[in-house]
Structure formats: structure tokens, C-alpha cells
Image: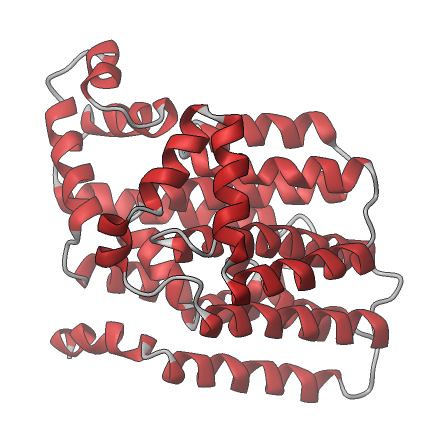
Length: 328
């Protein structure tokens, strides 16, 4: 019911710039060969191939949005239920209802949305030390959006067993760089040193023209929002889940993605980079309440539900559901 509700909301949302482009290429792909479809745009091959295959079935815009939403939710649920009981999944899905960035991933920036969904499998397999399976999903993820290359840091964190303490130290240092604005000079020089698509992307997205369209960068409110969930995770790990390796890895993954976002907080549309970390928030929120062994477990679940509702209201996500009035 939760997934169906969110899919209906996505179907009723107005089309935005990226989605309009995707739908245009999707309709055009029906008359093209696979190679011609790949050559027609500069997008990653995985997403273009997906569009091309779907266009051979039906070219309806509604069909594309509907099937895409269903597939993305299937990927998320399939990954989550590997380490979370199926009966507990509705709580986490309810958490996603209040997560404002997810609607953008499902209704506009689909390439990145697919990439983040597939990353859930990579994170799960790395938690269980299945490196080969994790690498396969990493490659699949890259075939949908190159920005997912930042997930490569998880292999380093896992291989060298970098501690949560050290990751927290790096996050604090990165936060100071964001607050002072030094992150722009530092990371721009590093990006230029690496060159290639990374260097070009950083220079392009940090240009005045892009930043003027996006608005404010190095946003302190985004930094605070990101930091809150680190504090939340640390509290529950130290209080209830010290021996839970899955939650420890989840917290490490969130910290790793958060560090990268903070370091590149100066670029335009940096919230899309932050989405890699923010996508884990509903799991960070509900996992402790689901897994803890405490007589107050039920109370914590209620508290988590209240937090989700507050986020739903505070960020104005409820406004996305106003078109549902048409149904009654």
C-alpha cells in the first residue's frame, strides 16, 4: 500500500526538465537500433539500454514512469529484505515517504535514482563480505550514472576496516572545510589533478552559471541535517547495537557518502550528491528500533514514526500528495 501510494504520487507529479528529456529519448528509441540509441545521447549505457528495451514494449509516457517506479521499488525491497525481516520493511518504507529527496530520484533524476537503488545491493553484499557480487553491482550502478563512482570508497573502507571513529574525524575535518569554504579550493585542485570527466564535472558544476541556477552552495542547513543522523547512529550503536555488524557497516557507509558530499558541497546541485547518503536515512532511523533488545522497543518505534511524520511536515513533502484529492 505504501509503495502503491508513492507510485501514484510520482505519476501525478508535474514533469520536470530531466524527466522531459528522458521521455523524449524514450519515445525516440522505439524506432532506433540498440547501437543507434546508445549513440544518440551521452548518457550511461545501462540507462539507455533500459530505455531502449522498454520502448519496444510501449512508448506511453505513463507506462514508462509506472514501470520505472515499480522496478526501482522492487530493487530497494529486494536489497533490504536480505538483512531486514519482511514484516519490518513497512516501517522503513514509511520512513521513505518522509524523505524529500526520494521523490526527485523517482520523478526527475532517474539515472541517479536507478544508480542509488542498485547501490543498496552493493552495500548489502559488502556487509556480508561478498566482494565479487558487490563489484558486479558497482559496475551495474556505474552503467546508470557515473556519479556512483563515489561508492568506490566503500571498498576501501571495507578492505582496510576503517573505524567509525576515524571516519567521524574525517567528517569533522571535512565539515570545517565546508564552513570555511576551503573545500572548494582543495577539491578543485584535486579534481584538476585527476583530470578527465571528474575534473571537467567539478569545474563545470562549480561555475558561476551553474551555481546561479542552483542557488546557495556549501549549505550549513544541509550539513546540520546530514550530521544529525550521524549522531543518531552513534547513539544507538553505542547504546543498543555495539555487536551488530550490519548497523556498524551501514553507519560507515553513511559516513563515507557524507564525507564526499561535504567535501564537494561547493558545487551546484550538490544535494544530488548528498542523496547517496540521505537515501540511507530511513534505514538508519528504523533499524535500531527494529533490532534492539529492549523493553522500550515499542516506544522507540513510535518515536521513529513521529520523527518521520515531523520530517514529512517540516520539509513540506505533504504538498506532493495534494493532487491525490483528485481521486476522492
